[in-house]
Length: 485
Image (cartoon, rainbow, N blue to C red; front, side, top):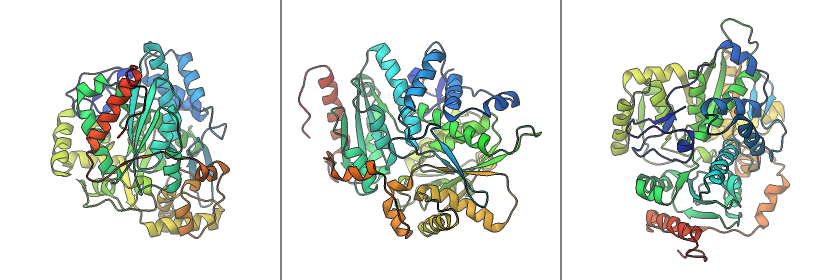
Protein backbone atom coordinates (compact mmCIF):
# COMPACT_ATOMS: atom_id res chain seq x y z
CA UNK A 1 0.00 0.00 0.00
CA UNK A 2 1.43 3.34 -1.10
CA UNK A 3 0.43 6.84 -0.01
CA UNK A 4 0.32 9.92 -2.23
CA UNK A 5 -0.18 13.63 -1.61
CA UNK A 6 -3.56 15.13 -2.47
CA UNK A 7 -1.62 17.78 -4.45
CA UNK A 8 0.37 15.26 -6.49
CA UNK A 9 3.80 16.91 -6.33
CA UNK A 10 5.41 14.82 -3.58
CA UNK A 11 6.95 11.35 -3.98
CA UNK A 12 4.73 8.44 -2.89
CA UNK A 13 5.63 6.88 0.44
CA UNK A 14 4.77 3.76 2.48
CA UNK A 15 2.71 3.67 5.69
CA UNK A 16 5.73 4.34 7.91
CA UNK A 17 6.51 7.45 5.86
CA UNK A 18 2.90 8.66 6.09
CA UNK A 19 2.78 7.95 9.83
CA UNK A 20 5.83 10.13 10.49
CA UNK A 21 4.67 12.97 8.23
CA UNK A 22 2.46 15.97 8.79
CA UNK A 23 1.69 17.86 5.63
CA UNK A 24 3.32 16.49 2.49
CA UNK A 25 6.24 18.59 1.13
CA UNK A 26 3.90 20.08 -1.52
CA UNK A 27 1.44 21.24 1.17
CA UNK A 28 -1.03 18.41 0.56
CA UNK A 29 -2.24 15.59 2.80
CA UNK A 30 -1.38 11.91 2.41
CA UNK A 31 -4.01 9.46 1.17
CA UNK A 32 -3.84 5.80 0.11
CA UNK A 33 -3.06 5.55 -3.61
CA UNK A 34 -5.92 3.01 -3.91
CA UNK A 35 -8.72 2.06 -1.54
CA UNK A 36 -9.51 -1.63 -0.92
CA UNK A 37 -13.02 -2.58 -2.06
CA UNK A 38 -15.04 -4.68 0.38
CA UNK A 39 -17.74 -7.03 -0.91
CA UNK A 40 -20.87 -8.35 0.78
CA UNK A 41 -19.00 -11.44 2.04
CA UNK A 42 -16.36 -9.40 3.89
CA UNK A 43 -19.01 -7.10 5.38
CA UNK A 44 -20.91 -10.18 6.59
CA UNK A 45 -17.72 -11.55 8.21
CA UNK A 46 -16.97 -8.22 9.87
CA UNK A 47 -20.52 -7.58 11.08
CA UNK A 48 -20.07 -9.54 14.33
CA UNK A 49 -16.62 -8.18 15.20
CA UNK A 50 -15.89 -6.07 18.26
CA UNK A 51 -14.66 -2.50 17.76
CA UNK A 52 -10.99 -3.42 18.50
CA UNK A 53 -11.20 -6.33 16.02
CA UNK A 54 -12.57 -3.99 13.34
CA UNK A 55 -9.65 -1.62 13.93
CA UNK A 56 -7.25 -4.55 13.48
CA UNK A 57 -8.91 -5.65 10.22
CA UNK A 58 -8.92 -2.13 8.78
CA UNK A 59 -5.32 -1.40 9.80
CA UNK A 60 -4.17 -4.67 8.21
CA UNK A 61 -5.60 -3.46 4.87
CA UNK A 62 -3.59 -0.22 4.97
CA UNK A 63 -0.33 -1.36 6.65
CA UNK A 64 1.83 -3.82 4.74
CA UNK A 65 2.71 -6.95 6.79
CA UNK A 66 6.39 -6.41 5.84
CA UNK A 67 6.22 -3.20 7.90
CA UNK A 68 4.20 -4.58 10.83
CA UNK A 69 3.45 -8.34 10.89
CA UNK A 70 -0.20 -9.10 11.73
CA UNK A 71 0.54 -10.58 15.18
CA UNK A 72 2.52 -7.47 16.14
CA UNK A 73 -0.26 -5.24 14.80
CA UNK A 74 -2.86 -7.08 16.91
CA UNK A 75 -0.71 -6.66 20.03
CA UNK A 76 -0.25 -2.93 19.38
CA UNK A 77 -4.01 -2.36 19.02
CA UNK A 78 -4.73 -4.38 22.19
CA UNK A 79 -2.15 -2.30 24.07
CA UNK A 80 -3.64 0.94 22.70
CA UNK A 81 -7.08 0.15 24.13
CA UNK A 82 -5.90 -1.40 27.41
CA UNK A 83 -6.65 1.72 29.51
CA UNK A 84 -10.18 2.35 28.22
CA UNK A 85 -12.89 2.34 30.88
CA UNK A 86 -15.18 -0.04 28.96
CA UNK A 87 -13.97 -3.42 27.81
CA UNK A 88 -15.81 -3.07 24.48
CA UNK A 89 -13.98 0.31 24.02
CA UNK A 90 -16.96 2.05 22.36
CA UNK A 91 -20.59 1.66 23.35
CA UNK A 92 -23.91 2.14 21.52
CA UNK A 93 -26.74 3.59 23.61
CA UNK A 94 -30.16 2.85 22.08
CA UNK A 95 -32.57 5.56 23.25
CA UNK A 96 -36.18 6.62 22.58
CA UNK A 97 -37.50 7.65 19.14
CA UNK A 98 -34.88 5.67 17.22
CA UNK A 99 -31.99 7.65 18.71
CA UNK A 100 -28.74 5.65 18.58
CA UNK A 101 -25.72 7.32 20.21
CA UNK A 102 -22.31 5.79 19.59
CA UNK A 103 -20.16 6.72 22.60
CA UNK A 104 -16.60 7.21 21.39
CA UNK A 105 -15.37 8.74 24.64
CA UNK A 106 -14.46 5.92 27.03
CA UNK A 107 -10.70 6.59 26.89
CA UNK A 108 -8.57 8.30 29.53
CA UNK A 109 -9.36 11.89 28.45
CA UNK A 110 -13.09 11.28 27.87
CA UNK A 111 -12.95 12.19 24.16
CA UNK A 112 -13.06 10.28 20.87
CA UNK A 113 -9.52 11.33 20.01
CA UNK A 114 -8.21 8.80 22.54
CA UNK A 115 -9.26 6.06 20.09
CA UNK A 116 -7.08 7.11 17.17
CA UNK A 117 -4.25 8.70 19.15
CA UNK A 118 -3.64 5.69 21.41
CA UNK A 119 -3.30 3.52 18.29
CA UNK A 120 -1.13 6.08 16.51
CA UNK A 121 1.19 6.34 19.53
CA UNK A 122 1.63 2.55 19.64
CA UNK A 123 2.44 2.46 15.92
CA UNK A 124 4.97 5.27 16.39
CA UNK A 125 6.65 3.54 19.32
CA UNK A 126 6.93 0.34 17.28
CA UNK A 127 8.92 2.04 14.52
CA UNK A 128 10.93 4.30 16.86
CA UNK A 129 12.20 1.33 18.87
CA UNK A 130 13.00 -0.53 15.68
CA UNK A 131 14.88 2.44 14.14
CA UNK A 132 16.32 3.77 17.45
CA UNK A 133 14.99 7.25 16.62
CA UNK A 134 13.69 10.27 18.53
CA UNK A 135 10.84 12.49 17.29
CA UNK A 136 9.28 15.77 18.33
CA UNK A 137 5.51 15.84 17.93
CA UNK A 138 3.88 19.25 17.36
CA UNK A 139 0.13 19.54 17.95
CA UNK A 140 -2.30 22.44 17.65
CA UNK A 141 -5.54 21.84 19.52
CA UNK A 142 -9.02 23.31 19.80
CA UNK A 143 -9.55 21.33 22.99
CA UNK A 144 -9.47 17.54 22.92
CA UNK A 145 -6.62 16.65 20.54
CA UNK A 146 -3.95 18.10 22.83
CA UNK A 147 -4.91 16.15 25.94
CA UNK A 148 -5.39 12.89 24.02
CA UNK A 149 -2.03 13.34 22.24
CA UNK A 150 -0.27 14.08 25.55
CA UNK A 151 -1.88 11.06 27.19
CA UNK A 152 -0.81 8.79 24.33
CA UNK A 153 2.93 9.67 24.52
CA UNK A 154 3.57 11.07 28.02
CA UNK A 155 6.68 9.56 29.57
CA UNK A 156 7.89 8.04 26.29
CA UNK A 157 11.69 8.16 26.17
CA UNK A 158 12.00 8.73 22.42
CA UNK A 159 9.17 11.27 21.96
CA UNK A 160 8.85 14.92 22.95
CA UNK A 161 5.47 16.57 22.47
CA UNK A 162 4.76 20.29 22.01
CA UNK A 163 1.10 21.34 22.28
CA UNK A 164 -0.28 24.76 21.38
CA UNK A 165 -3.66 25.40 23.03
CA UNK A 166 -5.91 28.45 22.45
CA UNK A 167 -5.93 30.19 25.85
CA UNK A 168 -9.49 30.94 26.93
CA UNK A 169 -11.03 29.16 23.93
CA UNK A 170 -11.30 25.66 25.41
CA UNK A 171 -12.98 24.59 28.64
CA UNK A 172 -11.18 24.73 31.97
CA UNK A 173 -11.17 20.91 32.17
CA UNK A 174 -9.72 20.56 28.66
CA UNK A 175 -6.96 23.03 29.56
CA UNK A 176 -6.18 21.31 32.87
CA UNK A 177 -5.95 17.91 31.17
CA UNK A 178 -3.02 19.38 29.19
CA UNK A 179 -1.31 21.74 31.63
CA UNK A 180 -1.25 19.35 34.62
CA UNK A 181 0.83 16.67 32.89
CA UNK A 182 4.29 17.54 34.20
CA UNK A 183 6.32 14.85 32.44
CA UNK A 184 9.69 15.96 31.05
CA UNK A 185 8.69 15.16 27.48
CA UNK A 186 5.51 17.33 27.56
CA UNK A 187 5.70 21.04 26.59
CA UNK A 188 2.46 23.07 26.57
CA UNK A 189 2.03 26.61 25.22
CA UNK A 190 -1.01 28.80 25.86
CA UNK A 191 -1.60 30.92 22.76
CA UNK A 192 -3.44 34.26 22.84
CA UNK A 193 -5.48 33.37 19.76
CA UNK A 194 -8.00 30.88 18.43
CA UNK A 195 -7.31 27.38 17.09
CA UNK A 196 -7.04 28.54 13.46
CA UNK A 197 -4.51 31.24 14.41
CA UNK A 198 -2.31 28.82 16.35
CA UNK A 199 -2.28 26.45 13.34
CA UNK A 200 -0.42 29.10 11.32
CA UNK A 201 3.02 28.85 13.04
CA UNK A 202 2.71 25.04 12.95
CA UNK A 203 2.03 25.06 9.21
CA UNK A 204 4.92 27.53 8.68
CA UNK A 205 7.34 25.26 10.57
CA UNK A 206 6.20 22.14 8.68
CA UNK A 207 6.58 23.96 5.34
CA UNK A 208 10.37 24.13 6.01
CA UNK A 209 11.16 20.62 4.78
CA UNK A 210 14.84 20.75 5.75
CA UNK A 211 13.97 21.85 9.31
CA UNK A 212 11.34 19.11 9.64
CA UNK A 213 13.81 16.48 8.49
CA UNK A 214 16.68 17.74 10.64
CA UNK A 215 14.60 17.70 13.85
CA UNK A 216 12.43 14.62 13.12
CA UNK A 217 9.18 16.59 13.43
CA UNK A 218 5.72 15.15 13.03
CA UNK A 219 2.14 16.11 13.82
CA UNK A 220 -0.60 14.18 15.60
CA UNK A 221 -3.41 16.43 14.38
CA UNK A 222 -5.85 14.75 12.04
CA UNK A 223 -3.62 15.79 9.15
CA UNK A 224 -1.85 12.55 10.17
CA UNK A 225 -3.18 9.67 8.07
CA UNK A 226 -3.13 7.11 10.90
CA UNK A 227 -5.67 9.19 12.86
CA UNK A 228 -8.10 9.07 9.94
CA UNK A 229 -7.40 5.36 9.39
CA UNK A 230 -8.51 4.37 12.91
CA UNK A 231 -11.58 6.63 12.64
CA UNK A 232 -12.83 4.63 9.64
CA UNK A 233 -13.71 1.92 12.20
CA UNK A 234 -16.30 4.22 13.84
CA UNK A 235 -18.38 4.12 10.67
CA UNK A 236 -18.14 0.35 10.16
CA UNK A 237 -19.06 -0.29 13.79
CA UNK A 238 -21.96 2.20 13.62
CA UNK A 239 -23.25 0.48 10.48
CA UNK A 240 -23.07 -3.05 11.86
CA UNK A 241 -24.75 -2.01 15.12
CA UNK A 242 -27.63 -0.18 13.41
CA UNK A 243 -28.27 -2.03 10.12
CA UNK A 244 -31.48 -4.11 10.41
CA UNK A 245 -30.06 -7.12 8.50
CA UNK A 246 -27.16 -7.90 6.21
CA UNK A 247 -29.21 -10.53 4.38
CA UNK A 248 -31.15 -7.90 2.41
CA UNK A 249 -30.42 -7.16 -1.26
CA UNK A 250 -29.06 -4.57 -1.72
CA UNK A 251 -27.55 -4.05 1.73
CA UNK A 252 -29.68 -1.63 3.79
CA UNK A 253 -28.37 1.93 4.23
CA UNK A 254 -27.61 3.51 7.61
CA UNK A 255 -27.36 7.25 8.20
CA UNK A 256 -24.33 8.31 10.26
CA UNK A 257 -24.46 11.80 11.77
CA UNK A 258 -20.95 13.20 12.21
CA UNK A 259 -20.37 16.28 14.38
CA UNK A 260 -17.13 17.83 13.19
CA UNK A 261 -14.72 20.74 13.12
CA UNK A 262 -11.62 19.79 11.13
CA UNK A 263 -13.53 17.06 9.20
CA UNK A 264 -11.27 14.12 10.16
CA UNK A 265 -14.22 11.92 11.15
CA UNK A 266 -16.06 13.03 8.02
CA UNK A 267 -13.08 12.11 5.80
CA UNK A 268 -13.02 8.69 7.50
CA UNK A 269 -16.72 8.27 6.67
CA UNK A 270 -16.21 9.22 3.03
CA UNK A 271 -13.41 6.64 2.80
CA UNK A 272 -15.67 3.98 4.34
CA UNK A 273 -18.32 4.85 1.72
CA UNK A 274 -15.77 4.50 -1.08
CA UNK A 275 -14.70 1.11 0.32
CA UNK A 276 -18.28 -0.14 -0.13
CA UNK A 277 -19.98 0.58 3.22
CA UNK A 278 -23.61 1.62 2.47
CA UNK A 279 -23.79 4.64 4.78
CA UNK A 280 -25.18 8.08 4.16
CA UNK A 281 -23.27 10.83 5.94
CA UNK A 282 -24.84 13.84 7.63
CA UNK A 283 -22.22 16.37 8.70
CA UNK A 284 -23.30 18.47 11.68
CA UNK A 285 -21.46 21.67 12.57
CA UNK A 286 -21.98 24.53 15.00
CA UNK A 287 -22.25 28.21 14.00
CA UNK A 288 -18.76 28.02 12.44
CA UNK A 289 -20.35 26.64 9.31
CA UNK A 290 -17.79 26.58 6.49
CA UNK A 291 -18.42 22.84 5.91
CA UNK A 292 -22.20 23.37 5.84
CA UNK A 293 -21.87 26.21 3.32
CA UNK A 294 -19.52 24.10 1.21
CA UNK A 295 -21.97 21.19 1.11
CA UNK A 296 -25.06 23.33 0.54
CA UNK A 297 -23.77 25.88 -1.95
CA UNK A 298 -20.21 24.92 -2.90
CA UNK A 299 -19.02 28.01 -1.04
CA UNK A 300 -15.65 27.14 0.54
CA UNK A 301 -14.75 30.45 2.15
CA UNK A 302 -13.75 31.73 5.56
CA UNK A 303 -16.07 33.84 7.70
CA UNK A 304 -14.65 37.05 9.10
CA UNK A 305 -14.29 35.60 12.62
CA UNK A 306 -14.45 32.31 14.50
CA UNK A 307 -17.57 32.43 16.69
CA UNK A 308 -17.15 31.03 20.22
CA UNK A 309 -19.83 28.37 20.81
CA UNK A 310 -20.82 25.81 23.44
CA UNK A 311 -19.33 23.13 21.15
CA UNK A 312 -15.91 24.75 21.49
CA UNK A 313 -13.80 21.90 20.06
CA UNK A 314 -15.61 22.52 16.74
CA UNK A 315 -14.90 26.28 16.69
CA UNK A 316 -12.78 25.91 13.57
CA UNK A 317 -12.76 27.86 10.32
CA UNK A 318 -10.22 25.87 8.32
CA UNK A 319 -11.39 22.23 8.14
CA UNK A 320 -8.18 20.91 6.59
CA UNK A 321 -9.45 17.35 6.07
CA UNK A 322 -11.92 18.66 3.49
CA UNK A 323 -8.93 18.53 1.13
CA UNK A 324 -8.89 14.73 1.53
CA UNK A 325 -12.62 14.59 0.78
CA UNK A 326 -12.29 16.83 -2.30
CA UNK A 327 -9.45 14.63 -3.59
CA UNK A 328 -11.46 11.46 -3.00
CA UNK A 329 -14.58 12.79 -4.71
CA UNK A 330 -12.64 14.29 -7.63
CA UNK A 331 -11.40 10.82 -8.57
CA UNK A 332 -7.92 11.53 -7.12
CA UNK A 333 -7.43 14.51 -9.47
CA UNK A 334 -4.46 16.08 -7.69
CA UNK A 335 -4.04 18.77 -10.37
CA UNK A 336 -7.54 20.13 -9.72
CA UNK A 337 -7.09 19.86 -5.93
CA UNK A 338 -3.70 21.60 -5.99
CA UNK A 339 -5.03 24.58 -7.99
CA UNK A 340 -8.18 24.73 -5.86
CA UNK A 341 -6.41 24.58 -2.47
CA UNK A 342 -3.63 26.97 -3.49
CA UNK A 343 -6.30 29.47 -4.52
CA UNK A 344 -8.05 28.98 -1.17
CA UNK A 345 -4.77 29.58 0.69
CA UNK A 346 -4.25 32.82 -1.26
CA UNK A 347 -7.79 34.23 -1.22
CA UNK A 348 -9.51 32.36 1.67
CA UNK A 349 -12.51 31.98 -0.63
CA UNK A 350 -13.22 29.60 -3.54
CA UNK A 351 -16.23 27.98 -5.17
CA UNK A 352 -16.24 24.24 -5.73
CA UNK A 353 -16.21 23.19 -9.39
CA UNK A 354 -19.77 22.17 -10.34
CA UNK A 355 -18.95 18.47 -10.81
CA UNK A 356 -17.11 18.25 -7.47
CA UNK A 357 -19.97 19.98 -5.67
CA UNK A 358 -22.55 17.54 -7.06
CA UNK A 359 -20.34 14.59 -5.99
CA UNK A 360 -20.16 16.11 -2.48
CA UNK A 361 -23.95 16.47 -2.36
CA UNK A 362 -24.32 12.78 -3.32
CA UNK A 363 -22.03 11.68 -0.47
CA UNK A 364 -23.02 14.09 2.31
CA UNK A 365 -25.84 16.27 3.61
CA UNK A 366 -25.25 18.92 6.24
CA UNK A 367 -26.74 21.01 9.02
CA UNK A 368 -25.53 23.91 11.12
CA UNK A 369 -26.71 23.95 14.76
CA UNK A 370 -26.95 27.05 16.96
CA UNK A 371 -26.07 27.27 20.67
CA UNK A 372 -29.80 27.61 21.39
CA UNK A 373 -30.50 24.33 19.55
CA UNK A 374 -27.60 22.65 21.41
CA UNK A 375 -29.13 23.61 24.79
CA UNK A 376 -32.64 22.53 23.67
CA UNK A 377 -31.27 19.18 22.45
CA UNK A 378 -29.37 18.51 25.68
CA UNK A 379 -32.55 19.27 27.63
CA UNK A 380 -34.81 17.15 25.43
CA UNK A 381 -32.46 14.15 25.49
CA UNK A 382 -32.31 14.31 29.28
CA UNK A 383 -36.08 14.69 29.58
CA UNK A 384 -36.80 11.76 27.25
CA UNK A 385 -33.97 9.40 28.26
CA UNK A 386 -32.23 10.69 31.41
CA UNK A 387 -29.18 10.69 29.14
CA UNK A 388 -26.68 13.56 29.29
CA UNK A 389 -25.09 14.69 26.01
CA UNK A 390 -21.96 16.79 25.63
CA UNK A 391 -22.56 19.91 23.45
CA UNK A 392 -20.74 18.34 20.46
CA UNK A 393 -22.84 15.18 20.66
CA UNK A 394 -25.91 17.45 20.94
CA UNK A 395 -24.99 19.00 17.58
CA UNK A 396 -25.43 15.54 16.03
CA UNK A 397 -28.53 14.62 18.02
CA UNK A 398 -30.17 17.93 17.08
CA UNK A 399 -30.10 16.72 13.45
CA UNK A 400 -31.81 13.49 14.55
CA UNK A 401 -34.56 15.34 16.41
CA UNK A 402 -35.20 17.60 13.40
CA UNK A 403 -35.79 14.50 11.25
CA UNK A 404 -38.00 12.85 13.91
CA UNK A 405 -40.13 16.01 14.26
CA UNK A 406 -40.66 16.16 10.49
CA UNK A 407 -41.99 12.57 10.69
CA UNK A 408 -40.30 11.69 7.42
CA UNK A 409 -39.35 8.04 6.81
CA UNK A 410 -35.60 7.52 6.98
CA UNK A 411 -33.08 4.69 7.33
CA UNK A 412 -31.74 3.78 10.79
CA UNK A 413 -29.59 6.59 12.10
CA UNK A 414 -26.50 6.61 14.34
CA UNK A 415 -25.20 9.81 15.97
CA UNK A 416 -21.48 9.84 16.79
CA UNK A 417 -20.82 11.16 20.31
CA UNK A 418 -17.28 12.56 20.45
CA UNK A 419 -16.98 13.46 24.13
CA UNK A 420 -18.43 12.96 27.59
CA UNK A 421 -20.59 15.72 29.06
CA UNK A 422 -18.21 15.65 32.06
CA UNK A 423 -15.69 17.69 30.02
CA UNK A 424 -18.18 20.51 29.44
CA UNK A 425 -19.74 21.56 32.76
CA UNK A 426 -20.33 25.09 31.43
CA UNK A 427 -22.62 23.76 28.67
CA UNK A 428 -24.40 21.40 31.10
CA UNK A 429 -25.03 24.37 33.40
CA UNK A 430 -26.29 26.47 30.47
CA UNK A 431 -28.79 23.69 29.72
CA UNK A 432 -29.86 23.79 33.42
CA UNK A 433 -28.91 20.17 33.91
CA UNK A 434 -26.89 18.50 36.68
CA UNK A 435 -23.56 16.80 36.13
CA UNK A 436 -22.10 13.95 38.14
CA UNK A 437 -18.40 14.73 37.58
CA UNK A 438 -15.98 11.75 37.66
CA UNK A 439 -13.42 11.84 40.49
CA UNK A 440 -10.41 11.93 38.13
CA UNK A 441 -11.75 15.10 36.49
CA UNK A 442 -12.45 16.76 39.86
CA UNK A 443 -8.86 15.95 40.92
CA UNK A 444 -7.45 18.10 38.06
CA UNK A 445 -8.34 21.28 39.99
CA UNK A 446 -5.84 20.42 42.69
CA UNK A 447 -2.89 19.52 40.48
CA UNK A 448 0.11 21.71 39.71
CA UNK A 449 -0.08 23.23 36.19
CA UNK A 450 2.65 24.25 33.74
CA UNK A 451 2.09 26.31 30.59
CA UNK A 452 4.29 28.76 28.64
CA UNK A 453 2.42 31.81 27.26
CA UNK A 454 2.54 32.79 23.57
CA UNK A 455 1.28 36.38 23.66
CA UNK A 456 -0.05 38.55 20.88
CA UNK A 457 2.93 40.41 19.44
CA UNK A 458 5.32 37.50 20.15
CA UNK A 459 6.86 35.73 17.17
CA UNK A 460 5.07 32.39 17.61
CA UNK A 461 6.92 30.72 14.75
CA UNK A 462 10.30 31.71 16.23
CA UNK A 463 9.28 30.49 19.70
CA UNK A 464 8.18 27.17 18.24
CA UNK A 465 11.38 26.76 16.20
CA UNK A 466 13.57 27.66 19.20
CA UNK A 467 11.82 25.08 21.39
CA UNK A 468 12.17 22.37 18.74
CA UNK A 469 15.88 23.14 18.28
CA UNK A 470 16.46 23.06 22.02
CA UNK A 471 14.74 19.69 22.39
CA UNK A 472 16.88 18.27 19.59
CA UNK A 473 20.01 19.49 21.36
CA UNK A 474 18.83 18.01 24.66
CA UNK A 475 18.23 14.66 22.96
CA UNK A 476 21.75 14.80 21.56
CA UNK A 477 23.01 15.47 25.10
CA UNK A 478 24.21 19.00 24.46
CA UNK A 479 21.84 20.89 26.78
CA UNK A 480 20.60 19.07 29.87
CA UNK A 481 18.61 22.03 31.29
CA UNK A 482 15.16 23.24 30.12
CA UNK A 483 14.87 25.93 27.44
CA UNK A 484 14.24 29.49 28.61
CA UNK A 485 11.73 31.39 26.49
